[in-house]
Image (tube, rainbow over all chains, first blue to last red; front, top):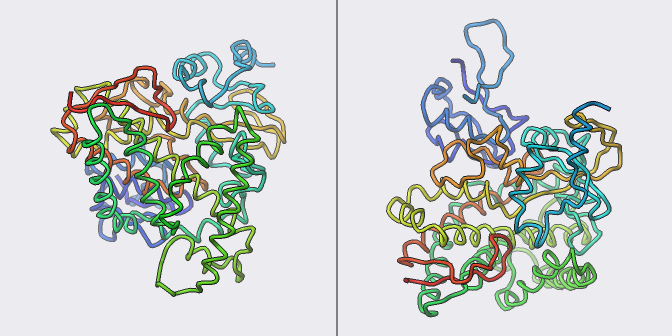
Length: 78
Length: 397
């Protein structure tokens, strides 16, 4: 489990994450999603898992925090 | 030629179509295509490759450099050969045009409209109830609701609304059998917006402090300049067709399903919190946008099949939405399905701009209809699941 982030290059503003897990995701003025500051570690919560599985652009990523690797990898849908 | 290519072509459907009466049995067709030849070539509409697997559609949408929208995402055209903004515009010009209206369609902005939407839905549902025991709910709710809501948002004067259904019927639904009818209606629609823009420009900005879509387009700048009249007309033309027809179909198809499934109807009445989840399932399985076109910009290969630069490609969202590799029991409509990453609004840079509005209208229409109408069933089994034609229901039976 790593730090949640929304890949701004992939997000297209479907806002499914906000509909399913509004306690973790917010939408900016152009409609793009972001993780609410302080909620980067909520990836285990059922609503967030559901948001990850339903993101049409597969844009919700998880960054490994315990490794030197800064590369974000897509969270498994399962 | 690879084995996979040979197998695909041996099951090729050269008459594959996704319009009109072809939609009657298209779900059986999808199942066959997905199992036996998920990429193939149809001779319809000048010829096109069809792509049906969810993963292949997703990949194509993420790759606009290979799968361009120009000359048109619509196949056949929507009563005009002018590229429609923003759906027929490729990068790099696309982003600037799309950005103009993005803030208007955020979920927060749409939620400001929901009290008005609910009031409209309630009024229309009351009219359904007073119309008798057998009622066409397409004419009474599914079509007027998006017309009223989108027209207010866009800034179309109320006296003009009665003519809108005919333009939609002729441009969208007559275009396959009678393209000349679609083009004639397209010219009328274009002239209508030309007059409307004249009036709005004459009235000047800020006269009534209105903040509708037409005002936004008139104020907008792209690369430091205002939009030309041609660009404004193109944008208005697209918004009109996208804002009215798709939502009407979505509401109608949801009611069509519920009218035939009293158990689902009862479940949603008892647990209205489930309605947004059910709406996603109806969008997945009965979506108003079954397919959209692209054009290959360079030679490419999809699932072993070569596609040449310049060839037309159709992304069959409706088939991808029933792909057994993605969905359990894909052809079953489960109103409580939770994992539902579907393609009804498309994806990538051309994702439906109005998806948050369309969803809200659909959910509110279902909520208010189920609240107002105690029980309903289909009165005419010949009426198909698709389109915006009549949906005759027996009310309160």
